[in-house]
Image (cartoon, rainbow, N blue to C red; front, side, top):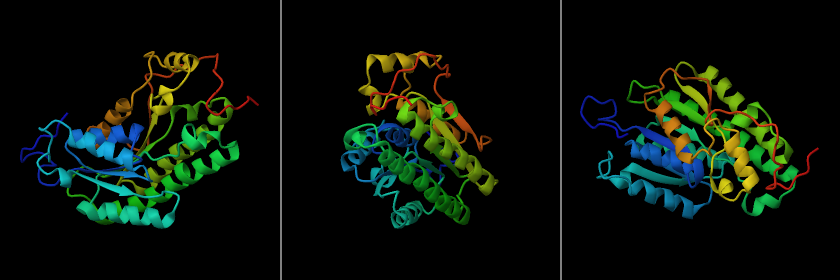
Length: 290
């Protein structure tokens, strides 16, 4: 879907502005690209993944030439690096994001620590929990509180309410066995709870929702065993892994006018969850069952 450019469209004079944290790969990258494809100006973020940020920029700039603002690519996308475990870095990121266009329509918080692949996959449980807590929970809460304050203070030049979207996990509601289930369910449940509480705190001036992906085939999903593939496919009524684009379309849809009355919700995007009785032990974290 592309945004129309006629003078009657609410974004014809002033562009829709989206910020997507954690947009150097995976779900965040897909969300940023989807917003750009719909004609939004997008600010993309990473902590330090320059190669990933460059890839996201390339994807945005290679979109169909008919997309809005394609004649001004330098004004359509901007990049920012920030460590969401550092308060000063968070403040600087939020300030810089709002100074770009003067307002923000939607802030999508997709950033999260990766403790399943790379060097952090071999960390002990305590270290993984600390990393996830600092980035996924504390970073999300501090950032979103600052963003909401700026959204209220600055407003937007549109009738559509500004919004904040957090990325959770559908399994947080049900629980999952193993070390990874214990820390991810706890962390993502905290994010879902915070989303509802923030929504009640800033209504009716801002909407806040949490989108909870099911089994999504990001980099981690590409390396799983056949057992895990069967589990991911079997736990969805649609019998397949989800794609990052499935999440991206949902986030964009509820943010750009199609979901104006959706607020304080945790929206599962999982093809319909139907948990199986025979679980596969996590080999990624190599954890024994308690």
